[in-house]
Length: 311
Figure 1: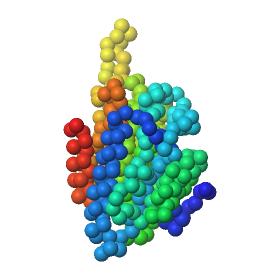
Figure 2: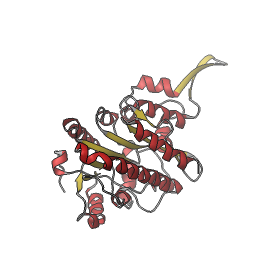
Figure 3: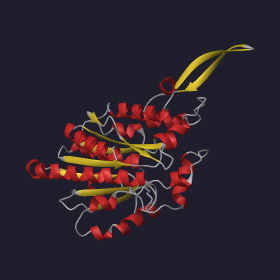
Figure 4: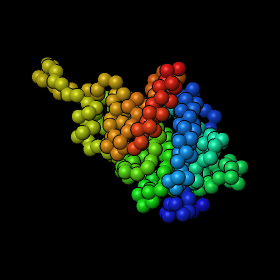
């Protein structure tokens, strides 16, 4: 499968995803997303023929469905000095089979993206049973590139409507790519690695040794991020006044709030309270948010999140 750059005509691409792992939060994420896809299709199917809509499903990190050493290595390559425990590495199972298994008229095209060729081929084999009924498009490429190509297609053809799922383990999605989705008919669900990675890169002393990843992820410069996540105070010592840099309280919540505010600069409506996903130690590790230009979409997403979070 070679990399292709013409989006709608040729198809899509892939990423990597683990299979039977994670904790209760994995199921919470998938359940919430599946409920939303069902509601989305119910509404869109009511109007698609009248308005000539073509529905696209885009999974930017679709994966093979099983984690292997390559997946762990990819995280290490992303941030070499970041230690992740086994539970954190065993993070997510992709939504591909759930979405394809929904029993109502589905999308006109399904795009599955994966940067790793072996993972992409494994996913294509797993989904072979759906090929006779649905148009599945697989691409081996970087998700950011393919998001940009998707955005170009959506801007050129106003009949396209896309449901986009971005659930990378880490910070692979650049803010510039998200910004390209502005002003078209896109519903986005994105997994924000608030506690599992971003919070660790915001070290307590404000050294920010991976500042380039943070600025690319948030779409904010270093001065803004330092002012947002750190506070300065002076302390009297035996040698005079010393300036102390301290990280803000509840940084994981602040990370989610900042990302939500950034999404609001691109989309008209965003879930103010995303789905918070916890590890076995009851620490928040991800926030799962929805963004759209349709207020009904966010109303539905917020209801799903509220019911799921209230369990």
